[in-house]
Amino acid sequence: MKTNRKEFIKTSLLAGTAIGFNACKFDSKTRPTSIVTNKPIVISTWRFGLQANAAAWEILKNGGKAIDAVEAGVKVPEADANERSVGLGGRPDRDGIVSLDACIMDELGNIGSVVCLENIKHAISVARAIMEKTPHVMLAGQGAYQFALSQGFQKENLLLPESEKEWKEWLVHNQYKPIANIENHDTIGMLALDESGNLSGACTTSGMAFKMRGRVGDSPIIGAGLYVDNEIGAATATGHGEEVIRIAGSSLVVELMRQGLKPEEACKEAVMRVVKLMERRNKNLKDIQVGFIALNKLGEHGAYCVQSGFNFAIQSKEQKELIDAPFYLKV
Image (cartoon, rainbow, N blue to C red; front, side, top):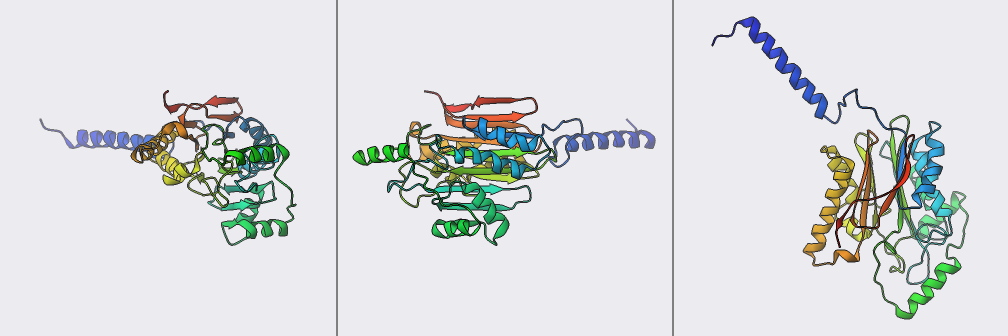
């Protein structure tokens, strides 16, 4: 059958339009204009995320920046003596010393991290000071402490009576066996998308209870405990840090979102990487918890974890609640 030149041009134009539409639909850098971004929004790990989100929301709802919101948010559990896995009142290492780890990342890729910090409760603010006032991205131990003092942070005893009592009881048996969802829920990770469409994240912890002195988990490690890519999305982790580090968990979640996965799908795939490595090493999954939360550029959010018990908090214009994360291990 013959096709004249006029018909050929018309057919070619229609085909080109279809290709252009599909590119717009699936290219992550060219979002359809009909999609409404859910912003501002903040999500964070665990039940104490509800109070943390409330502080972050005060900044976000007034047009404030995501980086300011996540810092203000996680400072809430850092200062709460009743929260035994973050900041003041955190559980000590096996030598009876409370040491803190934290990191922060903004929309430009600026990062700051502090490791094994003692006697300063707001580790996240020290991490931000490292990001903004030094040529480095991470300070540790005594050097981090001296830097904090030079920036006006006040020395404070972080080991409170209840944590000290638990430590002395632990010394009687001197057995280190973390319990999933108890010693493992040792982190607040927070992600925010502000009114301007910019993402930031923060993560802070006192780490595993009765850990070896000097132990560092995933929380202060950019790419493991936290990662932000302002073109795509952000992710943060909680749980058994050693397992998160093995898969560079948070950066993996963000890269999976770059490939087109929704936040929950990306978190699930990262958890399955953890599961496969545990099985390969003949480790019992019931002994650990690992959870991820993620937030993409459109304000879509999701989470996934190894076993039941992990939840995350969310606050936006339409939503304020605590959500149980879906999980892999069905007992």
